[in-house]
Length: 376
Ligand SMILES: Cc1cc2nc3c(=O)[nH]c(=O)nc-3n(C[C@H](O)[C@H](O)[C@H](O)COP(=O)(O)OP(=O)(O)OC[C@H]3O[C@@H](n4cnc5c(N)ncnc54)[C@H](O)[C@@H]3O)c2cc1C
Image (cartoon, rainbow, N blue to C red; front, side, top):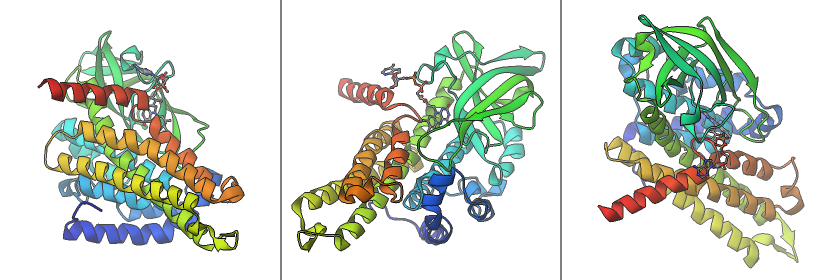
């Protein structure tokens, strides 16, 4: 670990590890199979206060920073990636409400975010990468806004009760609105049949003439792209932490198995080809961790963190898939079995190459930044 945790962050880390050992780790395989969190685990997440981790104390939360939330997501992900993914979806949305909502809206919704899940919604059925191609819209009607359209692939969709939604406010302008599932005209749609992160529902919402007051607009009119970008950058720190957590899990499984599995009269950990895989997994984990922790540190210090956060997710999402694939190979035939966790780690890690900006889009962003730095 490259970062020194403060005393309160260390206590949090111990508390999360203890919780996750008892209430998350034993259910890792079950969560993947049943595509849901056990009731006891989910209730524990809310009762223990994990949803309010980053919410300022004045709004009833614990007031921890981005280093602590990344550490928490990592600590969860080394036991089960889905629960970490669910927290990531909530934390990145809460951050945008904190940064862009009016004081009155924060006063109303921030305390609720301690026990109600929040989700961020940009993608539409016709495409996610090209957000200006969105058609869901908001139309001004006196002092109110009328919201219409379909949104899809929302992390925690269905589980979340409050959404930040990017909507067209003119043909070349996106704005962000806070929408509550209890508003008339709001409906949840189907859950996606995704192949991994099986505890986390990813689903649709429908807005049909949903009426919101002016203060449900986050930030200024037309600030939607900026808010969406910020949500991506905040999420990418946490996704780096998830990638590192999956890689750590892959490492533990590979090492434990290789120490006890014998071939040619010796534990397979003695074989060079197995050592190569274990070494690659271990190096990947350290590298991903360095990147997401650096991004979190920059965010806490108030410095630009978008590039490093994007690197953490871009590198981490590929390295975690390769690491989990190495682990599958170390486990041989058992690795290819659904009875062992290596295969679901690959499926879980794969999500990180698509959600919060696809790998291809992130590479464009990183290259742009690198070129800009050299031209400065
Ligand atoms: C597990 C998961 C969770 C998600 N959670 C959320 C969420 O919480 N909120 C939300 O709004 N969305 C969410 N999404 C949706 C996600 O953001 C989109 O899937 C993603 O933006 C890609 O959009 P698309 O699927 O429509 O693919 P498309 O945009 O149609 O892209 C298809 C392919 O073309 C490539 N491509 C597209 N444009 C370019 C370009 N300009 N240059 C190079 N390549 C390009 C893409 O990289 C991709 O490989 C989630 C998706 C997944 C898998």
